[in-house]
Image (cartoon, rainbow, N blue to C red; front, side):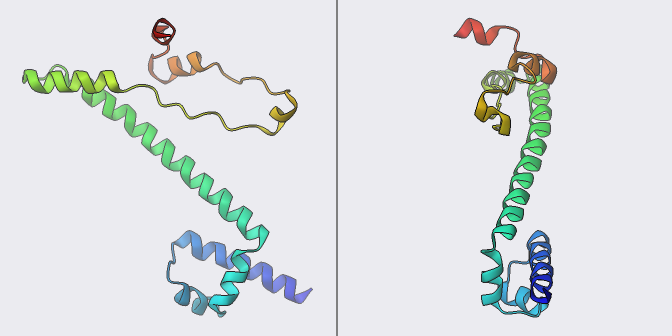
Length: 143
C-alpha cells in the first residue's frame, strides 16, 4: 500500500516536471530524488501514458485554436491589402486571399458513433457561416 502511494506521488511529480518542460532527465531525476531508470519505468506506466497523451492532445487543441484566431487576423489583413495603393501588393493580397480556403479538421470520433447513434451537432455549412461567412453555396457550385 505504501509503495503504491509513493508510486502515485512519483507519477504526479513526473507529469508536473513534463508539463514544466524539464528536458534534462538527469536533473529531473535528481529533483525527484530518483534515478533515470526509475523515470523510464514510470513513463511506461499506463496511467502516466494516458495522462501524457491527453495533455498532448489538449496542447494540440490549444495550438489549433490559437492558429485559428490568428488566421482570421491574417485574412482581415489580406483583405485590407487588396485596397493597397501598390497594384502589385493588391494583386498578391487578392491571390493569397483567394487561396485561403477553409481548414476544417475532421471531427473527432465520439464514443457513441461506434454503434451508429451519433448525429451531427452542427452542419458544416452552418459552422462555416458562423465562423465568417463562408459556406454560401460556393463549395456546392464547385462540386
